[in-house]
Every structure is written in C-alpha cells, then in structure tokens.
Image (cartoon, rainbow, N blue to C red; front, side, top):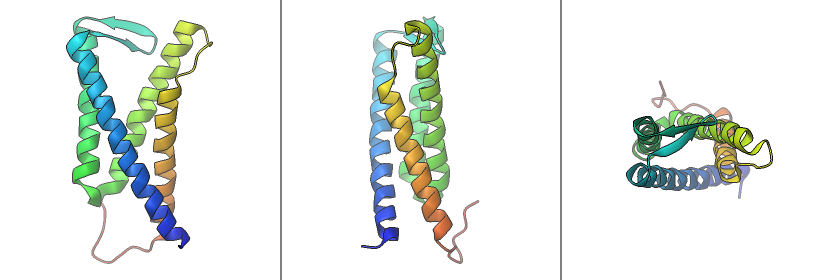
Length: 141
C-alpha cells in the first residue's frame, strides 16, 4: 500500500468520523435547546432567550457544516476549513469557560479531542492536496 493511498484512506476515515461527531453535536445542542435554555459563552452564563439563540446558532452551524461536508464533496477544502473553524471556536469557548469556572483545575477533553481530529484532517487534506498534481478541468474556486 502506497503512502498516497494510506493518506487518502486516513482522510476519508477522518472525514466520516467528523461528520458523525458533527451529527452528535447538533443533536446535543438540539436537545439542550428543547429542554433547558442555559449555556456558557466564554465563561459567561447565558439564560433564557439569549441562551436559546446561542444554542440554536451552534446547532444550525453544525447542520450547515454537515450539509457542506456531505453534499459537496467537490469542495472538500472548504468543508475541511469549516469543520476546523467550527471545532476550533467551540474548543476555545470551552477552554475559556472551564478555566474561568474551575480556576484552571479542569480540562475540556472532548472538545480538545474533536479539535485535534479536525486539525489532523486539515493536515492530511493539505498534504494530499499539495502532493497531487492538479487535474485539468477540475478547479476549485
């Protein structure tokens, strides 16, 4: 098995794993949206309509990223960047919230893991796209 085929397999596996993680994230935010309108935004507790708007925004943005990843495989570069930005923002939000509320005694392991997977997908996709010659007739905007 060549290095190129291993990288393409790793990219496909990471891509599918992150789609699954995004689906679970969207469901979690949907359930919290339906059950209890409370959330945290960079260490500030949100209640009521502001929390509902924030939860809906997180759920909707996960849905948009899922839609991009699943329905537009031709634009894989943009979907990889969007999943990186989504989990990067949520990871940063989690880090700040946990550090403020626990005085640095805790660590958001799940968000860090999802962000690491998105970074790994970004690196693998970037490596593949840099090593592949461009095919005539297939250009990304």
